[in-house]
Image (cartoon, rainbow, N blue to C red; front, top):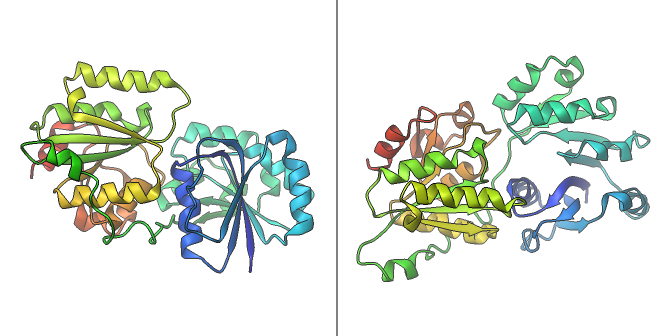
Length: 323
């Protein structure tokens, strides 16, 4: 069985875990080994996939661990994400095919990584969309352009599909005289994800619309405080539920449950390199409303089950949710 190594700073339940899950679920003939610098409550995220093994290894111990790894496993290739210093471990291992992947949509972050990256050691630079390939090419590095490859992310179809549990909202509906219209929002509490637009949009909608905000663990608690404060200022705090660090199975349940209640996945992101939440929601049959981004044109199901409005136009977004 071929062996692939995957290195990323955080062992968490965020978007990068979805990248690895999707690859392993769609290629059961390959074994994936993940090495992470820090534990961010990612336990159980790869349950159900017997071709993923992960370890959290301190950065100062990774060189020794990789030496052990080479002695016990035959590696075919290495993928490094958001971790330019990790490339140094493979400078003297030219026989290993080395990919450096960009999954952030923030070009400042990408430029910073390229500036401190041993690009001469990288065999291939990987992005998940044509849109991101164009943005990397615009940086002007001939070395990167010649080695640039588009590898679209894959949804874990063993979890995200139209069939499966869809009972997440049952208990809440029992406690209400009227049914709710769930709006599912997935992201982080930062400006690029545009959570303030979600709250402003919610304030324009009837009271049966309730926002379910799904986030991974936040390192800075003040960002969550800012979100809660904004919800209170907009007068919608009683119609917002915050859910943190969910398993893929529970998230898929939420998508299907929202689908059955004529709800939506709402994306207020201002930049996306791929948009995993949109892809996963569409796979579960949940309709999507989003700010218009070029990358949505690369999601085939968006054309029939999604609708985009101009970025920042909360009035059009609210109208699209009441159609």
